[in-house]
Image (tube, rainbow, N blue to C red; front, side, top):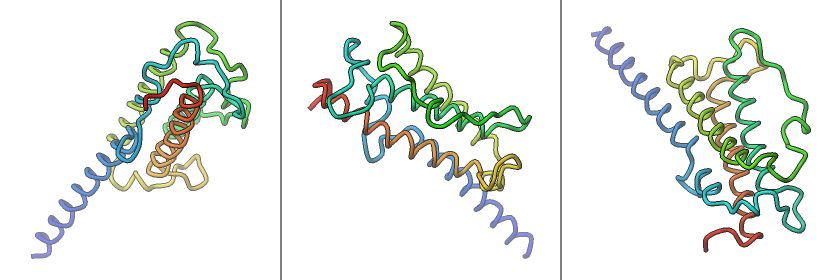
Length: 175
């Protein structure tokens, strides 16, 4: 009887962990309650990528790069098993100085890197045991994989909203 209860509890915990991972990945990919990253960057006119709308401090390019850099930083921090992570200097290392993309293909490369790093983070979630999701990283000061997943999703959702605002102000957002 005791082993039956233990097996049922283990099975329930396993499906809870699996469901949690699926929900985290859905959150990372956005779109449940708002526009997605993909929506925000799709079909952005080339000539407006470096434009800074009046009253705002950044361009769509700077927002895109900030999303990429911050997500990459969180990914590197989260997979720091070998101690190679080095903290970036805030805020200058997280924001490009120039409003325009440095090359014609920089926009597309940045988008691809965001996608690639998101998939890499999802692999971290899949590889982690249920207990490891909330277990503090030995190299941090209380952070864990669950917290970092929420941080990526929250950060990206905030800046996706800003990207859409930039596009609206530039007349480059669908009505």
